Image (cartoon, rainbow, N blue to C red; front, side, top):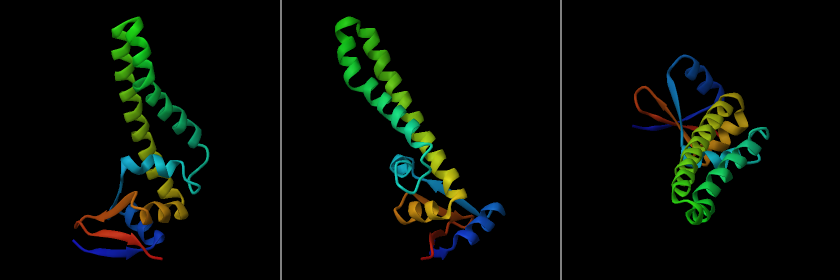
Length: 128
């Protein structure tokens, strides 16, 4: 497995031909959604759903434990589901925007948010 340099144009041609695969790191995707290079239209939704999940995991189960312990468990499980869905959504957003925006593509690859692999397992980095 070797590392090679590739331009955005070369990547897009290879991706459309099925030679390259773009793998987004879902754990880092949220950071890229909130970056200055990302499309501003997805930021409010990502912030809303991420914080909704956090609130359902942390403070609400503690409050609900005094009312009804079942609600506490439901809140916690629902929070985990929302956070997982938010990470998946952020990963899809990053993926689609990398295909449509060369600046964002460079930014994500340079900061380790995704990798490009070919069918032989070689990894590609952006040319500067």
